[in-house]
Amino acid sequence: MSFQTLAALRKFAVLALATAPLVGLSAHPSSAEAQDLSVTGTWRIEALAAPGGALVDVDQGLSSRTEVTIDRHGMWLASAGCNRLRGTLQQMGHALAVSTRVMATEMACEGPSGDIERRFLHFFPAVKQIDGMPGRVLLRDQSGAAVLLLVNK
Image (cartoon, rainbow, N blue to C red; front, top):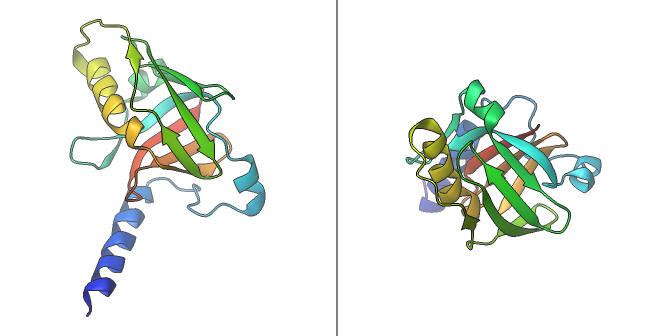
């Protein structure tokens, strides 16, 4: 088997594993869904990449306290129950460009809320594309790995 074939198979396996628990979330939405797919809205964090890169479900109690609000002008605000975070992004179809410059309050956040906040600050700026359907968006990094699942709040 050639190196290119192995690389393609590996990429397919990684993408399949990353989206396996997301039943009903299409990697290739219909053209109508693609037109309606937008990151604008108020969301809660359903799943977030862990330090090793695997997408991990967020505890329901904590998930209900998270909030990511993105307005139509590209301003985003987020909180996992501790600090307030703010930045900008731009959506162009399924492509996203999230600014690495983030403004944040500076409270010391420990425990699960602090962990979610640190992981969000690490993975959200790496987001490059959006998949999903209205009400649920899966955000992926440059390699196509799923790093963040947002659900309408």
